[in-house]
Length: 398
Image (cartoon, rainbow, N blue to C red; front, side, top):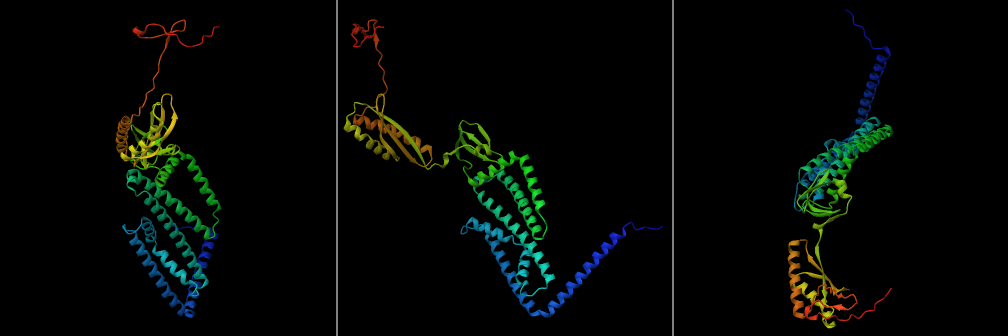
């Protein structure tokens, strides 16, 4: 039984030539390396000592970064992020940095120098991608480390963010590496751009809400537990998810609104206020003596301060239909309505008592109705005054 070789003669010849070329290059590299050792042995030894020193220093720096990763009251959160980045330095990068640093001093042969340059470029690009990934993730985790951002939603968000950051960073690193190796990456970049646009258009709604959630995490317009007002609704933030935010309305129902739509509206963060303003409009009778009217603003300020508030404005406002109107704006420090409401009630009672003691009357709107006979004379509504009284008025006959 005979077996025939189906490989074309041209292919076999090409493979053989390639193998011979590699063999020749390896022999040349070995010969040049031996000659290099013979002529520059002293520089090689000195370069080796320098390289060992560099490696030792870089390992010490990495150990310092590992220590910085441990939470401590004496260090800020950003130092922990920096320590986390430094601790991710790889052994391959440390060794290649040391070799590259002494490469020129040791008079490395051109062939060996090209090998060193290639492996150093590979180490630098990959290490840069690792550092960038760790820094971005560390910054995001630093921003989401607050208590109100803990929960299943944030855990899921961080998993998705890690995946997206890793894909983007290492894709950029691969393009940079290929470009440094002399590969034309124009077509690759264009293909990645077109693919990214297609994916973005297909899932633009999901990505819009996701990026809105990230905006909430980083910008923090509100947090879990904050009382907010938006559009025509108000409530308390119960949960911030990847796609939507859940708000418990003051009337009891749970409102669910997408993150994008929520950020498109004007949001009033009631929990973020530093004081509560209580407005009052107090009417005083027109018959009040002028000297008493002049003391009304000071009386109001005195009553507000006695109750623990601050009168930001107390003064005459307008001539009302049945009273002289005074405006009183009271600022209560803090954001607790359980303090502001009782203060407002006590202040109303204090104003009534003080005005009564000062003889200041607070009128209420009144209206008098007159009944007239066909001839225009006034008819009194009471039995003992049944006689008609003339009404002074001019009659116009058409």
